[in-house]
Image 1: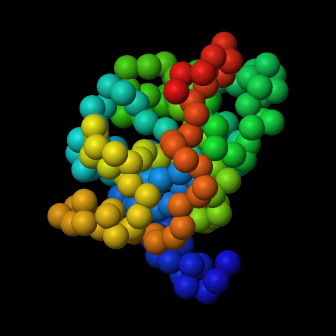
Image 2 (image 1 turned 45 degrees about the vertical axis):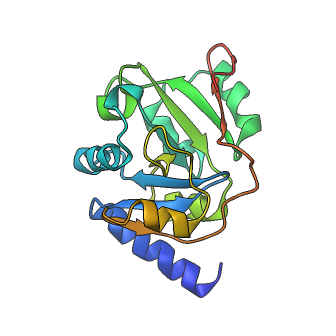
Length: 185
């Protein structure tokens, strides 16, 4: 990874630890993220995005190990999800009872992904934890793929941006139910 990217990742991690919302490239679009266990940061992200808390959020991680504490896993689920990771597939998996409602919304499950985007993956690895990850756009508006549009759209928001190239995926990641295997999006 180039020096400036490494510096930018370390700076982003400092912002995450301070409770700031960050923007970063993912497999298909720019994402907005924050520390999933910082309620204030999550509420700020939801406010910036104009997303209702009831919908729940996605967590991205650099490995399944980062996600394990949040999830109720069995061998069937593990066998179903691991061939797709790291990669652009999000799975909805039953959540542990302690997982906050600001992450699960009205559900008893959590949407999770082990990302294969190098910047997003490095952010999670350096932060040492999953990140909330939602497309960087106000709800009902198209997802953003360019940093220039991101900066213009969120000019009034306190967001730290990690610039980089969005992945080659044409649309946002597919979402599947890990219990049934059914595609949800």
